[in-house]
Image 1 (cartoon, rainbow, N blue to C red):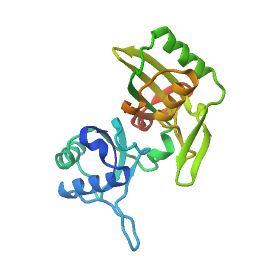
Image 2 (cartoon, rainbow, N blue to C red):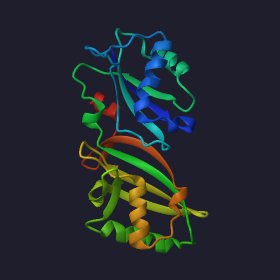
Image 3 (cartoon, rainbow, N blue to C red):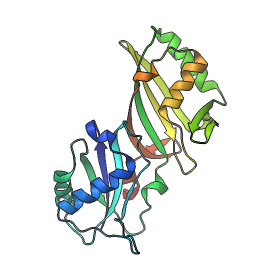
Length: 233
C-alpha cells in the first residue's frame, strides 16, 4: 500500500531539518503500530519520499510525502493513528492511496508558492513599490551571488521566478512569489527580495524577513494542480 499525504510543517516543527523529517515520520508510524516497507541491503531504510526540501525556519502550509506500507489498511484509520504520534505543528491534511505506476513526487512537482512578510526599513509608497516590482520583472537577467564553502557563485535567478507581487500592509510589505523548481535547482525567496532591494533601491529590512511556503504544485500551461489532482485524471 502506497500513500500520498499532504501535511503542514508549522510552529516549532518548522525547525526540523529536512533530513530529520524521515525519522520523525518513521518513528510516528512505528509507534502507531503500522508496518512500513524497507529497502533491501546492508542498511535498510524506510520507503518514504518527500517533495522539495523546505528550508529550516520556513513554515509549510501544504507539503507532501509518499509512504509505502506492508499491507492495505483503511486510509482514515492510518492517517488518524499516525497523526496521534506526530509532533505539534505537523498536521495531516489529506491522504490518497497511490495506484501502481503512479509517478513519485519529485517527478511531478515543479513549482512552489511563497508568502513573505518583510518590515520596511524606511517608508515606501505603494506606487513606488509597484514601480520597483515591475522594473524587476522586466529584467531579462538578475544576477545574485550565492555563497558556499567554495566561495561566491553568481547565478541568474530571473528565469526561476514565475510571478512576484507585493502589497503594503501597515509597516511591512507582503510579497507573493511563485518559482519554478526542478533537478537543476531553484531560487530562494530571500535571494529574490535581496536582489529587489539592491536593484530597485527598496528599503526592505530583510533581517526580519518571515517566509511561509503556501504550497508546492504541478504547473503546466498556466494551470496549477496538486499531485492529488493528477492521480484523479
